[in-house]
Amino acid sequence: MPAETYGILLVSFSKHSHQQHFIPLYQAHPRLRIIGVADYPDIDPYLRAYNQQWAGQLGVPYSEDLDESIADPAVDIVSVGCEIERRSALIVRAAEAGKHLWIDKFPGATLAESEASAVAVERAGVRAIIPGYAYGTLPQHARQVLASGDLGTLLGVHVDVMFGKGWPRPITQRRAFVAPNGRWKYPDIKRELLTVGAYAVGLIQECLGPIRHVVGHAGAFFFPEHGAHGCDDFGTLTMTDAEGRVATLCGGRIGTASHPQGGPSRAYLIGTRQSATIDGKRPALDAYLRDYSTGYDYQPNPQDPMQWHGGPPVPTAALSEDTAGQAAGLDDLVAAIDDDRPTRYGVRQARDLMEIILAGYRAVECNAAIDLPLEQEL
Image (cartoon, rainbow, N blue to C red; front, side):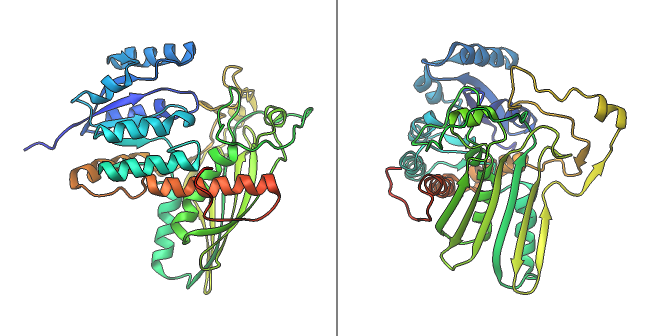
């Protein structure tokens, strides 16, 4: 008997999400079929046009009646690609309707929203995944090293995850640091300690126990857009877990062509017997072509200045076909639905990740160490 096929609804192609990059995964998976595209009715005209464009390319209907779209019996999975400020409400609606969830990174804009998402998923008994943190080459290799026992007792971790995108320029306007307070969306920038640093926090969650203290630093800008908003384009966090083990991270956007593979992705694991350096983009094939490298126009597209949907040439190609782990995550979600079991990385872990990130931002704002757990209203 053939295995069941699951229908997937794509909610929003927000420019801050990776929805468009998920489509090839869905199309290639033998157990999935794309049912439709939907969004909230009060969206910007550019987003409505973009949603309609993708629906047309996919040959599926587009709707701005979310309740009707989610309730469609043909929909089994909702792929959440809307702005972070709107995700929790959508996750709760989908979970209460009995739909499984593929969530692009964050389940809410605040700790309270993230908790509401986690509770809704747990109460409904649906399967949900945040695929960006536990399935890629870097966390997979880290788990293998830790499982081997060769390090002895793990003492600490450092993680570097940075994106080699955007065009650094002199900082002519420097606004004082602005705390997020639930607002992450800007037309021209993303908060990069959240956007990029979250990948490093996800790996740290794999290695350590519950985080209890966080210190954060941000505000040394590469990009004038971030300086004008007083929002981080780069940051560092130092944290300790319940056993006193230490983790540090650097995360952010560091400029186009600053790394041959689009940005470093490395972890350093320190043990009582040995230490290990893990490069999530190795082994790789290096092919440096002088004329191509020197003749390339590295200036970002004016329509995508921070290169959210593009980037410079990558002369070093990782040999792994799935360094980000998206295909592995999709397989895990399908298997979790089949077997009625949790995914490896779900909404509860993502809620805890958001708590760590929020503690980091509070530490930057207060210039002080922050204890966890945080108050729920954050």
